[in-house]
Image 1 (tube, rainbow, N blue to C red):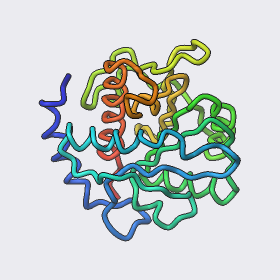
Image 2: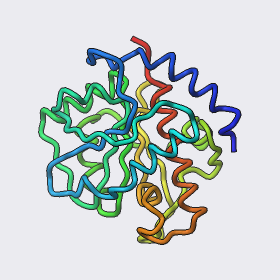
Image 3: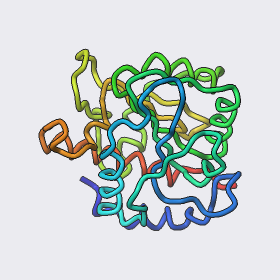
Image 4: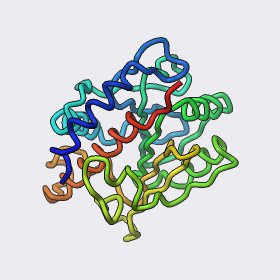
Length: 229
């Protein structure tokens, strides 16, 4: 565990970036996770205790001044630009309008970060829609040497596997814009389930802890990797 040694560094780096808004924002970003609300029938609101628990872990383990509550935002909401980290999850279908496709691409190109978590049943529609956003880029396995697996806690084997489903290995896919990871897609992992209250699925405490640690890494990477204007 590297949290004690990297906590101050991560905090100092972020506080330096805190005054740097996304390119279209009028003020400094809000330091929270924004849950993405989408159409198509999927339950974008799944795992209700996951993001509050993740935010609590970030606040306790990094000293970053994160808010206590998640935000909720649509792609066409003007508030989208206030959030450096958006989270997408669910079990079913995602369907973006043409305008939403353009807005998501613009958000990511301007420095935003998207974490998509397949809650079992999201894979087909997410891959279809993200291909519309970046038709010229592929989802690729994020190398195990990438900072997202080492920013605060070390994950030498990659994203942890929380729930079995079809028994496939957990995978962490990404879309890179230059050297920056702009989209991180956790597949066959159920990372968000691991953030839920421990009495929701009665998972082992160690698994809950591993999921939270990975979430802390995601957030720290997202807010410290944004390009300067």
